[in-house]
Amino acid sequence: MSKYSQQIIGVLQDTEKRTLALISDAARDADLDGVEMAHAAARQVRKLIESLLGTDSLQQNSSNVIDGARQPAQAFRSKQKTRKREYPRFCVREGVLIRIGWSKKGKREYEHKVPKDVFLYAVKAVASAGSTARGPVTAEDIIGRVTDVTGAPIPSYQVYVAIGLLKQQGCIEQVGREGYMIPNDVDTRAHALWADLVDSAGRSQE
Image 1 (cartoon, rainbow, N blue to C red):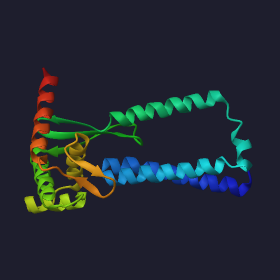
Image 2 (image 1 turned 60 degrees about the horizontal axis):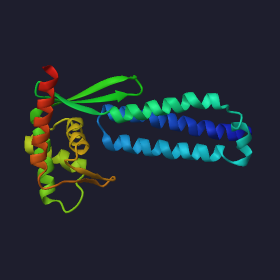
Image 3 (image 1 turned 180 degrees about the vertical axis):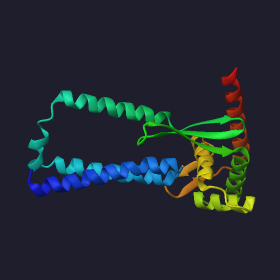
């Protein structure tokens, strides 16, 4: 591999690392769109790196990797996929919605808390947006409607947490980056979901 080839690969690898680091930052702020964009960007950079390393001029250098070195990497990726499926998790504690996520950077769990009244404001805003929209509704529109309902700004991450729960449980459906499709009975679904979370919390304390 030439000197400049190594520098190009190094630049791309650094870009990939920095992009992946943004995922945990976006997740911490409950910026779901940011998380998805960072994931997509990192995947594209990884594909470019693999494409360059797969050219004839570079294959000899990569062919020296032994099978024993691949196995730990495969095990690590498998573990990461399993962990990705485990998070985020949602629960209700003492009337507060809790979103439990995993910080890759800190290698630990973290929590976002949303008061019940904020969750209900978010649900009302989602239902209102769905009743007038002819297509996908953006998170920004929902956040704006929450402010209209409350008359005061609500931390946007709290609305994102509510949206994330509704999406995870099938109350609303994400349509790519266009936004969310909202069914007519989203209000009923959301209240039933909250009741289920409360029941689950009660059973876990028994």
